[in-house]
Length: 399
Ligand code: ADP
Image (cartoon, rainbow, N blue to C red):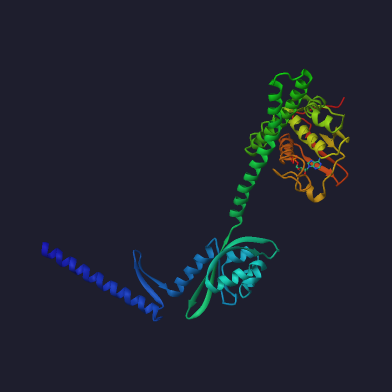
């Protein structure tokens, strides 16, 4: 039995050797170009793979890659590219092939690309797209020699998503810096006031004024924190609106009282007309009014009037906060309702760019809309609507 086994093993080894030699011979024949088809014994019987088929498989892989793949002549003429590259450039594939790679690269990067085509290399640059926009990409360039012909292969990775992530990270950093700064200012006032009040021999009137200043700064702090909380609730769909019958005039008065230090300091005049009783979330209505009124005061010169008014319009109430301040250009109006967006003209005035986005989210949570009518130098009126009617369970009384 033992001898028979060994004979079997020897036989197997011989068979394997023979198959290995066959395989080597086939490979050499392929390399020499003598064979253009392979017969492979698979579990499903014999299958024929032509070399043309193998080439097609490569092409299929290239076509399905999430990177753009391009082959170039040494002069930069595109000899082949996959659909992904054509999509990236927003140009038809037939048009891309035979055009020049430099047409799709921003001119500032032409020298870098030229160098990479001479000695391989990798670099980030911008693709210039058919609609004149640009796409950030990472280019990996390699020189190949096929049948003694110099060819350059380029793999193009779209960096748009990566750049967006980087931008979010840097926005977050910027935001943390900005919020910390905004929180520190009122905190310094509060601490200074308290230290002075508890110090010996401070006259009673001074103590009163210091505590008033501390209170105004506490309101400022509370406002920043409340806006941050509201935005975070809105982002995670947790803005639960609790409607009840409320008096908008009373709400506006409370807001004005919280802003009284600013009003006194800048000798502003606040007017209120036609503010109704209605059904809405009182805390949220006060927040919207606070954010809009605070802006109206911040972006107005001294001694100006700020008006809060309302009127019924079909099945909704239209509320407006009007100022006679610096105004906003049409281009800037388009940017207003974005988180942390501050217009270029307001760097000296404090703020973190949250007031309007929070107002917008709260108005929308009530089923309303918000917009601005403004012109530079002519003041601004921010409007918002609150729906009436049975669906919202709403009512309003303008008496
Ligand atoms: P913040 O006032 O904290 O910067 P907001 O979201 O409330 O943030 O406002 C965003 C930007 O819109 C402000 O930085 C300012 O440039 C502009 N803006 C808002 N309200 C007014 C207004 N009433 N008049 C002029 N510009 C305004």
